[in-house]
Amino acid sequence: MFTGFLQLASQDIRKTSTTKQHSIGSVGVTRDGRAYRYTLAGGATLAPGKLTVAATVNADATNKTVAASVAAGAKQVVIDAGGAIAADTYTDGYLTVNDATGEGISYAVRGNSTTGGAAELTVDLDESVVVGLTVDVSEASLTQNPWSATVISVADQADMPVGVPNVSITNATYGWTQTRGVCAVLADATITVGDSVTTGTSTVGAVEPKNDAGEVQVGVALVAGVDTEYREVFLTVD
Image (cartoon, rainbow, N blue to C red; front, side, top):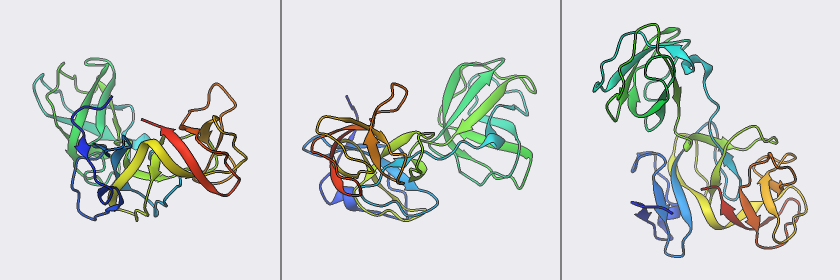
């Protein structure tokens, strides 16, 4: 399933650092087949055994016109941001041309400039533009890497689940979040062995039985789950 992944030892999956060691979203796998993604915590400390979700998409960098034409082969795009954007918020994320000339293509982002409000935002790409973009016609959106600025899930199912850390990862710190394999996960309801589980709707960071076709499956219960306790789930996030 995974190619080009990092081989992780047991001590690696519990290491955290304020210095970036890998590209955000990098895949790491242990000898027993558990899979992890390299993560940047956002907002508050991520707790072991609690489900995390991707950062909320910023409307100020969504569906915005490009501020200058871009030739095929270029690696820089300038968009008309709708509000303040911090420098390198979108590093390891994606720029998608969502409408008009050049539409339908996503590009990996190397970094971005900063704006104090509505202004032109410069985005440096990790790859070349395939189809040229037209000033004030082409429209683009920026999305953070799903494992950048992740937070503990709130008690609803409106966000993208991205995994469960095995150790506390403090705000603005890097670490590994488990996405596949056996993992202790908080339950917010009674769970039966073999149940597909999804984001919980009663307790933050918890999972509950999946009972609707529209709910995202995050794993399968290996043992019976008890409300407020941590039990083994085979994660299938990734």
